[in-house]
Length: 182
Image (cartoon, rainbow, N blue to C red):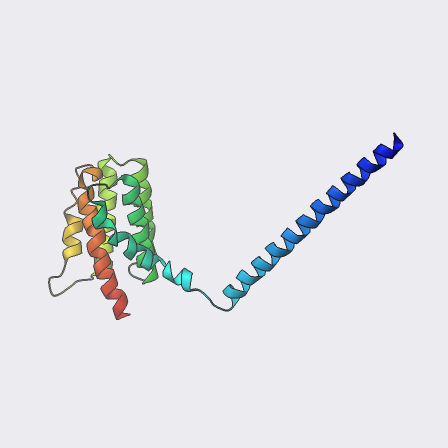
């Protein structure tokens, strides 16, 4: 009987040693992988991060607006407001308060989309964004301002979602022009 217990103990010992060895090899590969990715960051390899800048993110978002058509929901509207805030911040357009106001408007859209108070908050944010993007255009190129003003504060925002979507598209074009000038 003692002989069987010893063989069983040896088998368990070898299994434990194998498991520990496997864990050690896994830990080494993981550590080497982490060190490699840290080396890339420390060398300044930021191409993926640059490609995903808030500005590029908003331009890409607005570029897909045409394919969405009437398939616009409140998450889309909130996402657009947040991405617009990020793009404005990247280009230093408008004040930091404007970025906060747009993000707050996004939360209102998610929490209470049918409220006319939400519509008014979004409208005011879009009007401020339009002014930041196209400040006092003397050539009459106030497309963004007119689009923002066309959002009626006395109606639910969701009923006017296509107007907001158009604002996103037109503002992306204007933001792209501004970004090329800087």
